[in-house]
Each structure stands twice: as C-alpha cells, then as structure tokens.
Length: 358
Image 1 (cartoon, rainbow, N blue to C red):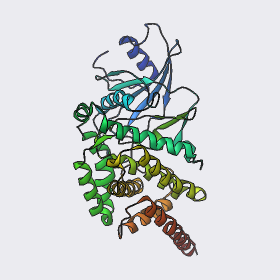
Image 2 (image 1 turned 90 degrees about the vertical axis):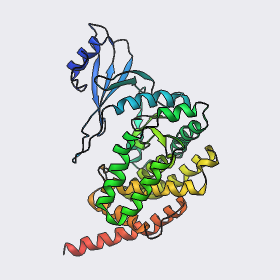
Image 3 (image 1 turned 30 degrees about the vertical axis):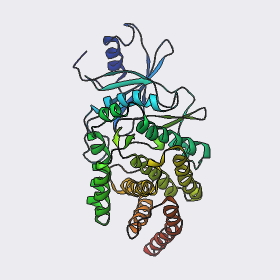
Image 4 (image 1 turned 120 degrees about the vertical axis):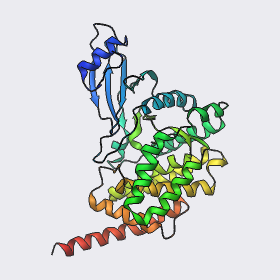
C-alpha cells in the first residue's frame, strides 16, 4: 500500500490500508468514526476489536478555509516528534501517547483520550470558566516552557525543533503578515512583533496553545495538536492562549468578567511556575502584544473564529486598534482597557444600528 493516495476519512480505504501495513489483523474490522479535525487535518477514531482505541490524523495540504492557505503535509511528523518530546516535560497523561506514524501518507496515530471527555472550548462557550481549569492550563504551559529551557537535553531539543517553517506558514504569515495587509493601522505593530518573534529562541513553543486543543478528562487537561511546535518565543503561546479568552469575552457579555479574571489568573499561575526568564516585565509586555495581535487576527486574518458575528468582530477590531495609541504592557492594563472601552464601543454600535434602521 506504500505510495498510494489515502483519505483516512474513507472507512473502507483506511481499513484496507491498516491491514496492508500490518497495523491490524488481516480480517479485523475496526469501528471508524470521523472526528472534527479543524481546518488543517483529517481526523478519525479507530476502535479495535481488542478495545484498543486510536486517533489518526492526516495533514491536509490545502487547509479547509475560504482563502488559499497551503502547508506541507510533512508537518504531521513534526507533531509526532513533538508528542514524544512533550511526554518528557509534562505530567503523565497530559499529552496523548504516540503509537505510530507513516511518512508515505502523512498519518500519525496516538492513543485516544479515554471517555468521558469534553473539549474545553465547548465548555468555555457555555460561559463556564472554572478556576481550576484555568490554573491547570497555565501550569501545563509553564511545564513546557520552563521544562524545555532547563532540560539537560536542551541543546538536542533546540536542534530537533529549530525549523520554524510550519510556524511561519501557519502562524506568522496568516496571523501577522496577512492581517497587517488587511488592517493598515496595525501593520507596523504586527511586522515589528513578527520580526521579534523570529529572532527569539528561548524555549519549546507549542504554537497552537488554545482551548480547542484541550480535552478535559476527570478534571485533568490533555493537550493535543502539536504540528507547529518549534524552538522560539514562548510568549507567543501565552498571547495566543489569552487571545482566545479575549474573543470569548467579546462574545459572551454576560460572562465577560469571568473571562477577564481568567486572563489575570492564568498569568499569575504561569508566573508562579516558571523561572525569572519567563516572568519578567519584558516577557509580560511581549505576551500582551501577542495577545492583541492574535485577537486581531482572529477577526481579520486567514483563520477567524466562527462564533463571533460580524458586529462582534468589528467591535473587537475597533478596541484592539485603539490599543495601538498606547500599547498596554501588562495584563492588568489590558483588562482595564477592555472593561472601559468594549462596552462603550458596543453601545455606539447599537446606536448606529438603531439609527440606520430608522
């Protein structure tokens, strides 16, 4: 079966491929379920007759977005490498167990997270922001950053993850460069931040650290999706994660305070778990700038959040662009600005809508 085209979302083709590769028995007929794989991958659940359960991922070359957005399917093998190295740094069970990979059809297999579990993004979108989960979210990221920077194998880690091409193609270009072209007011800010990010090389960076990549099982968090992991700027992860909380604060006005509290809670917990290299004022300032950049990209870049309507996107964009007059350097200042300005912008938007409908 080597060299053939394989679509793992086709159960018949996948079963034949697994048999041909000796991954399952010749007469074994596993249960195959297609999962929501996001924009960049095909993802399926494979339940074997033995009870063993895998999740298989296959990277797409053209991502599932309205605009042209391509990335080499080889990134799935970066994910396989990341999964194995992360297991050294985080608590047991905090990343899925690697099973196998195939470079011919760009597939990686991992142990499925046991049932019952829930996607944390889904929980957050109900307005449920549990303090223990926010704290654990911060501690898990701190373990990756601080652990990789102080690991005895640091030099090996840095060499293994020195290539930033997937991060460039899936984060810096679509989030920062593309958004800069669409929002001229933000262009200088975004280009400068992108340049700084490219130069920074201090720790292992997950690159996709968001609630959608967190599964909650028995009050424990499991981190998935590691295809843009690299050695670089750890504050990108912090800002990327906090941008998601900002988006949800925009979306869920009745739960806004819970999300704004979670931002400060996250940083306080993260700072308590890392060394001074990652918790100083310069790091906090850079993380805040990444949060603003990513939150803007989520309403104006290639990969926009699906739960914000057009009016909410405009509100978030207006608030972020206002920050460029005097960019906040701390999470406290960012949260204070959000509290003061977003309701005012919302009020103006409602007034404009009312006047326009008369």
